[in-house]
Length: 379
Ligand code: SF4
Image (cartoon, rainbow, N blue to C red; front, side, top):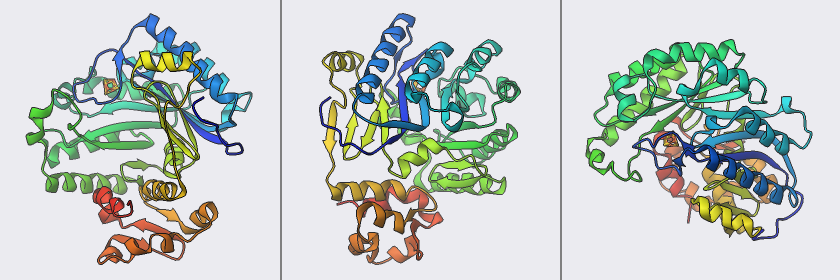
């Protein structure tokens, strides 16, 4: 291990990155490599090794396990469960949120028969759009007509916590495209919807499309449409881009936004183990060679208290309910409003922030420009 890990702080959220994909989507900037069964086997052995290195020196008691990617639904049920078993150390699986990102084309009876033998109890479906032209542009392999049956199958197999991803802001897309998409998503009756504004800055080969993206005004209008439509249909916005029916907020992502310790395992995964923030190499070769030398947390930064306060604020303000002042006080032993007094008192900040006796939050109408507002708190 590159650093000594301080004792005492239990890790409650674990992210496992499975970087293999059947093909590369043109807009994707995540670390992914072509799927190969043999390579997947080798990768899993290293994932187990990485976990063993952590578990030997750090307390892990998961409230959430998240299989992300890449395409983690390329794992076999046996592989999924063997990772879950290792992560739980005998803990009761029923109390843990265990999410699998699933590619719609892999939702079949035979896959679900196998998946039913695992502890997966939440599915995040990479739907992205309910519009065939948009799906084709995104180089997704599924068709709109297949989706209602696939979601029905998930429900038939007992999945009651289903999240669907929606990408908006595609080149040339207007408000009506978005409204149609939202309507068709709602007809599927998921419990959770995660939205993503398409960003092509880091997608090589897609730069020519950047001028065709909706302008800032249209993006803001689209964001507002998402908020209003989902709110009208019983979804609470609990984070900048995430909406859930009552009781179905992602426990995993809330760990990030509450700035709780989380372990990221796998190539390119990131983690936060107070006071260390780290990122694993976005290269299989480097990831393997580090683990062969017993090195974890390769790219690791020790965060001083000032940095920790800024990170806590940056993540906490993503939540619509914002930051609980008493929790900040309990964590850092100081008053948030005093620590960031110079920013809170800036002209016009009273129009942007909600400061109640108990919380500091962004006003809903400023959620779309949250990055600019949060940036003011960071030195
Ligand atoms: S399936 Fe997901 S991770 Fe894989 S290339 Fe497509 S967008 Fe990227």
